[in-house]
Amino acid sequence: MIPNDTIVALATASGSGAIAVIRLSGKEAIAISSQFFKSISGKDLTSQASHTIHLGHIVENKRTLDEVLLSIFKGPNSYTGENVIEISCHGSPFIQQEIIQLFLNNGCRMANPGEFTLRAFLNGKLDLSQAEAVADLIASDNEASHQVAMQQMRGGFSTEIKKLREELMNFASLIELELDFAEEDVEFANRDEFEKLVEKINLVLKRLIDSFAVGNVIKNGIPVAIVGEPNVGKSTLLNALLNEERAIVSEIAGTTRDAIEDEISIGGIGFRFIDTAGIRDTKDVVESIGIKKTFEKIDQAQVVIYLFDADVISNNSEKSQNITIEIEKIKNKYPQKPLLVIANKVDQLSEEEKRRISVISSVVEKSHFLLVSAKTGHGIEDLTDSLLNLINTGALRNNDTIVTNSRHYDALLKALEEIQKVKHGLEDGLSGDLLAIDIRQALYHFGEITGEITTDDLLGNIFANFCIGK
Image (tube, rainbow, N blue to C red):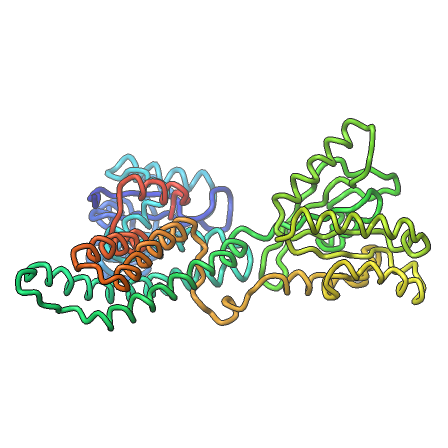
């Protein structure tokens, strides 16, 4: 599976910039580069030490393409485990393409998506879960996703899995040995110790599986639907949260007719806010479509913010009762979704009026009822604090292993299923040959995570999502 040709690609983002980095990897990377690199000091590139940088020019025949810095990394002490050359040139797209085309015409081929990292995996520089973390690190757009990707890329998750697999493998070997001496009826694997190990693996797998709930929202952001009647200030609240005029604000009810989405980072966690069309009875066809989309967005959201106009409610007991009924409907329809109820426009209320609207808080937890003014910004900080409190970030704060990859999650679920079969088998006194079947399956699923067991299709699916130069 390990290719022996030399690949080339742009490692930095495409487009104009101060500099660009062009990467080559392969057995002939240094030899090919030396044909076109002319060192300022006249050095022969093929005789230079690894991890050194050289100033010179890229020259095609007698035509100078650019003045560059060329870095040498000799295998196996490189990112890919092969000879690697990185050329830092000026960031003109024309220069980038000229240099890449020069190498393509002289013994290199264009790298496939993620092929540099694929070679790092195939050459044992990274395991598969670490390789996948590279893509997550590149895609991270907030502190939390960056922290988790770094922890996984450094091998925190794979180290935990490898340790469990090694311990299970040791017992599996003893049980397999028992099968060779079946006629002598000997027992090499201490069943009490084995039960303790299986229970330990069971607990660790459950913890990792549970962490996916946090890991998934850290990686993909937490969708938050802002709902309520028309003209209660949903768009104003979105603008206040984003600190920009993202949504159109108007005194005309029904201004928002489609969902508007934008994402911000709060406390290092990505939140994706969705400003929805106001919920009311209407004969306007376009507005009706918007209201239908509102309920679709509530279905997709993980947190719901219900907003109402505190100024209107404060002196209208019937309106207050109707709002309470609407809140109860949302709670009953989406019992698993955290619900924040927000009284908006409190800047227009007296203290006595604020106390009167607080009766609505009886339908939700006290900590889930907030008084804000989206227009002045009053209470916005309390809202962001409440949103953070809804997300269990304890594992993140403690630097625990957090699973963010759905492929890992699926493999962990399958491994847990097999481990529980082993656990029940031990309790029921099953023979070693039957236990061995389930143990082999558990080991298989552990191996899927770290890449000790792979297929070409699996690798193709994983690395197809990488950028070309990584």
